[in-house]
Image (cartoon, rainbow over all chains, first blue to last red; front, side, top):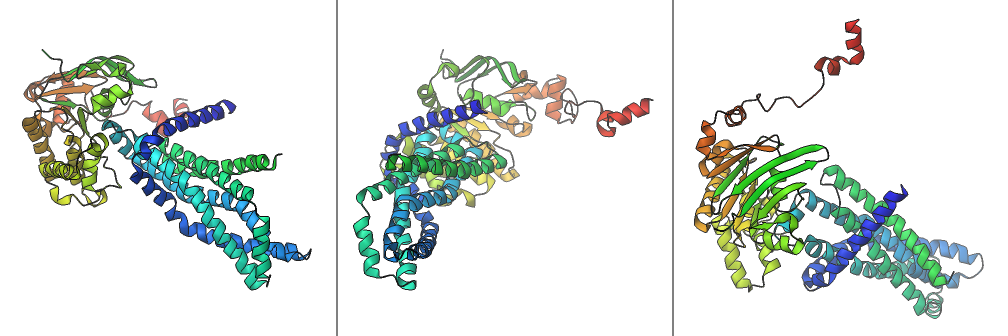
Length: 248
Length: 273
């Protein structure tokens, strides 16, 4: 069991090295990377914005309920902003990304393997790692921080909608306290997390797709593994990064 | 005298404990169409995978253009593959690209041609397979026969010296099959390419192949011109050429005792007592 897991981690690490080796040549043809940013990013926009709105609204409700017990409902803006920037934005976006873009990547690459498209490329002396895998990997890594930023903005709008419009928190206090309390380090924490999550989710998605057995069941299982492994990995990395940022 | 484009000597290959090839020798002469035939499951497609370096042989030597495939690194293998075109059984077209872009794909990957030159080249190849008018279609809009013709245009767009066809007639209607047969013959004659056709369509192969190899039980059991194979009195050749259900190649996959399987072991024991 432990041996298998270690072997798998080693295989993923070797695969990562091979993909990284093809990233620069892939960037030399930016059209393919831009197309993948569109696939992984723009096509995930609706679900990211919808979920961002609802998460922000829930944050507004729960935050208001909690803070008014201490008479501090004016701090709702700070609570929502820090919660979204540092934690909920990167984590929820990454989980949604794994479920939407990650599964799409895995099943697409797995089906390309199953229908001999990758083999056909190899037979044309075209390296699939450069032309298929690297652009998709880069597309995911670049799209994730952008999606997190959009999630955060829409989430803040949702929190403001509930806190200010519905619960009558003073709008001046909501925004000014947020502006005063949120520091650049908080924003940086979210950015670092989103990049790490994008890296992990994209790597798992392309790895599982590339190594999926060329059968319907094989592609299905690989797609499931993408969601499960990515989700666990995101939460694990989140804990490690949070501990590192807090210096614990 | 230059080496033949393909030379296979004493090829051994097994999947797990099951031997697929046990001492196969094949020569593919320059400029000829060589057919590799055999019953389903005899390893014809595996032979192509070995030949193109997709899998490694357990023993023996496979030479492509005089170079040993097994001793060649990835860059060398890619260099060999650039001299080779392959038509896959299912076409293997890239499903997110149009017909035009599918044919242009290897050219874009390997050469920097002006768009006007590339367009002329791709349309010429599509014209050769009769599908210039389908250049803007997506692979999902093509029939099986059309998809295979597009794949053929893609296989020849880099002007390969060797063309490999993996089961090119499977699942085609008689008209599409006739078109593919004609294209294989014309490409061989007009471009002078060497061709290997892996198939079990005896009648179609007889009309185009200069030489045929018949594989069975991991070995070459017969080779010669289509006429020579048709006249052969070897039982396995006779069975394959006539399409007999049973013979040296058995109808039944090896299995245990029928009564024991159907009635169960306890019933058999009861019957004996």
